[in-house]
Length: 540
Image (cartoon, rainbow, N blue to C red; front, side, top):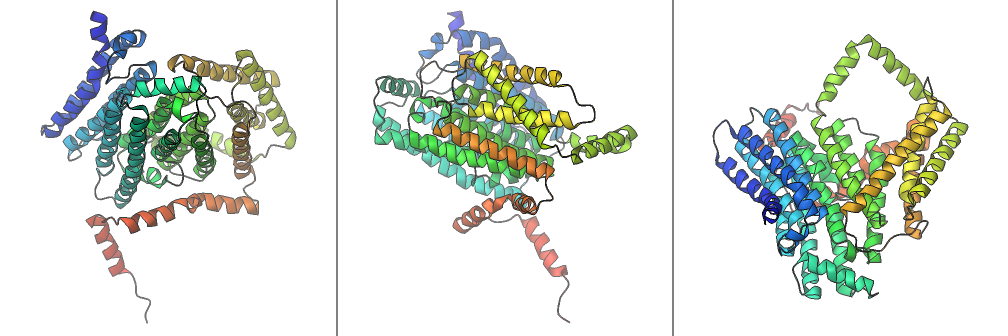
């Protein structure tokens, strides 16, 4: 009985966050940040103390109709708890001295509570309400600096797109209830698995539902052309950017993992993800290389990484989706919270004569263009490593993800071979094998965190796998040209178009403002009026 009681403790995390946010929002003292930090730390301790019990005794909690207790849900709840503690602790110093701190912590904890509810519930209605609560709470954080016009415009576009995603999800859940006559996620998934095992094809309602879920995931993950708001919300406080990029935007991947037995059987939904997410990955990764601002580069990186995560799902690489989700969350949280140190690092480089020497050396190495022999040797070596490790681990799924790893390893080997003190071929081979084994081991370990039901798997060198390999090859070739052959006229034109973001966000911004205009902050209007008044006249 004690184990059962302990296994129920993590459900108090979202409710504690919600009531904590409500209390801190009413608090007027200077100890708001301190209280929020202590509360997040206590919740982290509770989760860490109860996680072994709740993870290994899943059957004790599965009887609940409102709580979905699986390894995936426990991992997602742990991600929310850890990120909440990190972000609140970081905000304690970063937001010190800001006005309306109680409002900031209230909506921050409301957002965390909504995410925690969404990843733990077993009820469609509660899931949708949690999804809606995430968007509404996050909108208040994105507009925390109400006098910044770019932040207001970005939040306005996100508000519109979020409503489309929520309507798509609402329609999908309504069709699920009509088809399965149940509002419980475990019942729906078990029925879908049973139908798939029996060889039954999806009804048209289920096909539409799968497409609507895929559409909601694409919008949530800010895939092109619905990406503009993600690039512009860097005007918000850095902890809010970290929360968005490290946690909230990943929910599209979780949504697909949750309804895998349904979405994986719909070829239309799979190809929707393959085309949109694949092209988004290619374009975003190339556009990222033209950006100078650290936060803007990270935003484009998030768009590319989310596209790659959705592409992995469409290829049937579900364990890789979970690994990508977790790794991206921690990496982006660290990158955003550490982005302020870029200025200090640049100052240290300027003041250090040794660093100047290293900088000049790196510039010299960068100017060295690898010859064809170096490229072919690196590509052959990385391909051989990938094939050997893949065969040893016995993976027989889509080959495109391994091809992407081989291309990334090729670039790394080329950089090693063109540096001043290049390592030997033997050392390069051993390091490549070491990195590939780590990748394969992590990919294999994720099997234990996902359900064991059978799903549709994309075979190696199928049409979908070849499509992904073509996209990755294009990304590899164009990235190399942009880095080493920027003097070519066609490459310069491509670089200019990429610097403009391929002009994909302009039409969507015009459409949103035409459908629902937004009022700019008063300070922005005053600045515009002052500039117009002081503008020199062209008349004689």
